[in-house]
Structures are given as structure tokens and as C-alpha cells.
Image (cartoon, rainbow over all chains, first blue to last red; front, side, top):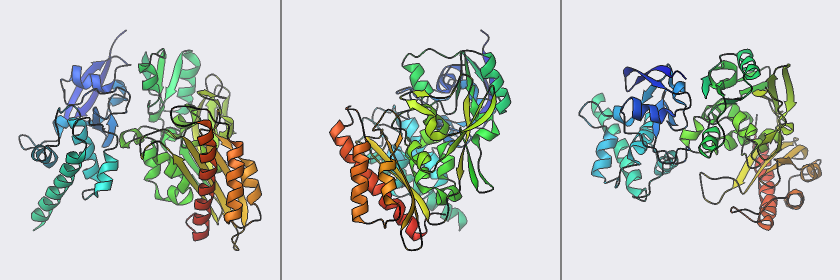
Length: 164
Length: 288
């Protein structure tokens, strides 16, 4: 059977790929686009390691059929830094030791970005709820939660300085 | 497998009619895990999310129309809907993580036909209707008539749910949903209970409905528990009677989440608390 041609935007650039209808978007991103940030943990939407933003909404890319991406705008973990300058979330994860094995980290970064995009000053409880769809078997979550709160503070401070 | 994304209900009906082995989906939050577990692939997976009617949430002449494929995050973000049916919106917001909330839909929650589906008890107490499209056109049926058992529905071949209709509740009315799960988040109900209560100016109950999830092969309404409330104030005696009737109506199974005895007990407790919460909202004017 002929493969499906999908055109979309990925991390701000026009992109296109070929896929089979039953392929997960996750597999198209990794195998066709070479974007290896999103990981397959469970493949059933439970663990969040494959989290991406699709048209601004946080999704498990393992639950998205690749052809659904036609015409959409996708952000993966590869798209959240500003060139060589890490996103405050990435910087705070590094400084806060919010990762050990690293498999879950791209998903946490994307989910945390989705949270801060809509709620720039979350409480710890809000952070914990927003990250409830991401599983980490190394850190015990505490350093991740603290790092997200630290990144929110850095970004708020940046905004205040820019406004001055 | 092929993928199709029709843009109208008629186009989706035609596809379902011509492709015998086709299946509709919205968020695929149940479909993908089923395929992963070895269920055979459909010949055509029909994505309903590109049909505007299937994803719109709007009030029209006093009736809410909730698209069957609208992601639950669109319901929780809708303040007017939340003001009218806070119990239904709360239940919708309990289904999975933020990632899942951006995919999961009320249509999927209903048609996956889990006895533990969180959105179904509040749909039942709000006497929601489902608009069903199929080869013979559209028909409107009570949501309560759709699930027939675990994983089974009364939908005929070629049919799918287009939208849900909920009449705006009258003044003095509110709903509530409570569930018990083995931890604080991201799990399936041991028991779920929804209630909708209408109070008159004196605080006397003039209409009541109670529904229970995860205690029978389908979500059930419990008229024996709600009927006794009519004409009464919602006080400790009335709540005790609700609990007893709800426990008696429950016929649950034993599984890893709970035993029969435990579920029966919890069904009574949650039914009682859901009635108290709905009545509290109705009293405070937190409903419409």
C-alpha cells in the first residue's frame, strides 16, 4: 500500500514525511524526521515520555496517528531551546539535577513548558497535577517539581527586567 | 489500515457504510492501547475530530450541545458549561492526565462502555440525550440506553454518536460527581457516584437523580435512592436512606481495585456525599 504524505510544521520549520496510516506520530518524528527527543515508554498514553505540543496542546505522540499531523504545528523538545541558549526549564533541570537516566526528561520538559505557557506562576500543587501524566522512575519527582518552579521564577524575573 | 478524516457527518456515515471493517475514533486513548494489546486493526480508522459539529461545545436555545469528539480540556475550560453542570465538567476533568485530556472525549468515554466511565454517571443524572448518526439518518436516544455491558453498546452497525444534548438545568438545581480511586490521581474508579438535586425556595427537594459507576455491568441510575428525597429536606435522615438504597442497588464485582463488600459500602457513602454536595451547590446558587 502506498504511504501517506504528511505536511506540517515542526519546531517552526515546514516539514514533510511519509508514513503508514497506522504509524504513531512518535515513530514518524523519530524514524522519519530524526527527532529522537520524544521517547516511547509505554506506547499507550500512560507515561508521557513521548509528550509533544500539537497546535499548542500537550499530547502523547504515541496516541496520535501520524496522518493526523497533516497541517498541524508541532513542538518537540528539540524546539524549546533558543538556538544554543537553553530554555530556562532546561537550564533549571540541569542545575537542579532533575534527571538521572534521562528517558523521561524530554516529556517532562515539554509538559512543563505547556504548563508555564498557560500558567507562568504555578503553585507546587499545580505543577504536580500538570506533570501527573509523566512518569519518572529515578528522581522521585521532587527535584523535577522544584526545577519547574525555579524556571517559572527565572522566567517571571526575566519578564520584569524586560519591562523595566 | 487506512486513515480517513471526513469533514462532515454525512461523509463519515458514507465511509462507515462502504467500509465494512471501519471504526470511528476521537482521541484514540482507548483505541491505541487496544491495538497495542493485539486487537485486530480496523480496515479504516475514521478520525471524527475534523468534523466541526463533533468538536463544538455551545449552548443553543437553552440546550447544551457537546460534540462527541470534543476534548475534555475544552469542557473544563468552558466557564458557562461549568456553571451549569459542575459535576459533569468535574468528572470529565478526572479522565487521565493533561495529555489525555487534550485527546479524550465524552463520546469515547461513553462508547468505550466501561462500567467505570467517569463522565457517564453525570450524563445520566442530567438526562443527557445522544444524537446518533447512521445509515438511516439521525436519531436522538437517552445516553442511558447506549451502554449495554462492558465494552458493548446498543449502537447499530454504521452508527456513531455525534453530540450530546443537555437541557440547561432549571434554577435551584446542581449536580455533583465523586469517585474513589486507589490513589489521588490517574486511576480507574472503584466506585463513582453522581447526583443532581433541585431544591425549592424552602430547601425541600423537588427533583433528584442518582447514578453509580463501577458497581454493575453498566453505569446505573438508582431511582430507589433518589425517589425518597422528593418532598424532603436534604438532612441526615434523608442522606442515610440514600446511602442504604445505593448500597442495596450496587451489584459489583471483586477485582484488584476492591471487593464486592467494599464497593457496596463505598457506593452508599459516595452516593450520600454526592447528594449532599449537589444540594449544597443548589442551595448556594452555584448551579445555573
